[in-house]
Length: 376
Figure 1: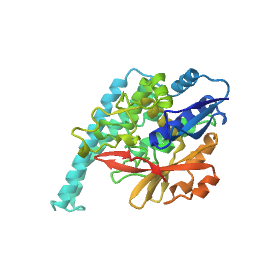
Figure 2: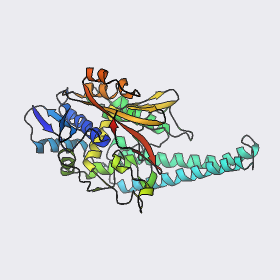
Figure 3: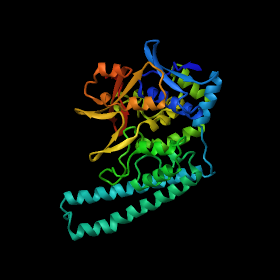
Figure 4: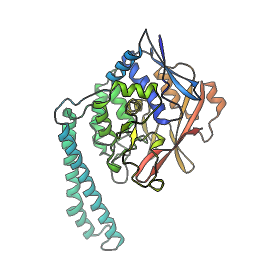
């Protein structure tokens, strides 16, 4: 066995925590059957992860394996055409949104009543054609994506997770039928993205609370991750796992690092302009989503590890000292004690949890982010 101290990651940062889990996930695909395990230990003033893999493995071999596990490129030569289709879809969404807003405005101004013939005529002539247009553009985008214009089936759903529920249902069904006991990656991803039965007031998928980049400021979770898949280098993975983060990578992040919370009021310029991150950490963290399914609860969607407490939604995650394989780690992150208003530390200690951190889901401007974590 070989043990690696992943000193670039700390447990009190949600992005770093998810990157540690993603490292476990990707390594487990290379050495399946519970051979890969993750633990945490206090080093240099923080809880930092340790990864145990079978056999004698060098750092270079580990990095090569992780890079091979996350590096993907489009199968087709029409990735640029897909970017054009993304813009067409975004424009169609805006047209439909504007038409619906005009309808609401006229109702409020008493131009016509909601159930009047005039309202029905407006919906039929102004809204319905735009709904059909959006559906057509999304279908064209889906056909191109599934044909290989995106690097991975998980990024074929759309630029982000604000899609029609039928789009998720289609890909999720395909992934479930193709899943095997040793390879259910795509199926687990779609289970983490959301549920087609849970939609918002506009009939759009209500996505996982990990979905922070939904088109605001031109940032899109899936298209950005797709770009990272093709661009990430072994060196960027090494910097994220083994070195102090220097934040030298431009753009393309999941929005999970509390450092991303930079309100306009505190800066002279757009805080998204010139933003920097750690590409290796973001790509590994993306793979950890497979451990966080989102399921219906009441009329809404429940994301594993997230719960609404009083006036805030919070994400709470555990830290453990014993080396654990994926199945046990997955059960720990979903343990109900973590979502209590005040987790019972004695109960957590009894199941091996030595610390638990909690971060608020917040909206900064139009963007969703995590606030700085605190002990739960």
